[in-house]
Image (cartoon, rainbow, N blue to C red):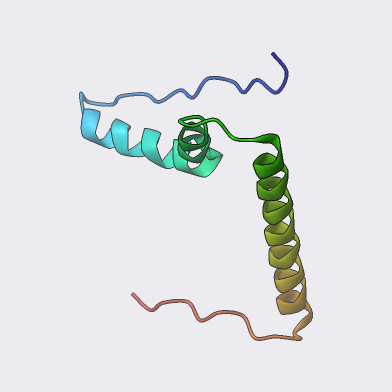
Length: 83
């Protein structure tokens, strides 16, 4: 199968399963595994797949353009929350 990803590996330290589970969820969220699983719950028509991929591409392009404009100083960067 093409596009295979290596398995996610999480180590449990000091029998702290809750912390390991939290790390696993964070890794899966970052990789988009949850989104992928939700998409495979129901069949997606080819036209819907193309529309979704196009929308994702537009979203990525807008995000890249926004980041580039922030770096160049054309628009202000978002405020970071003070802790």
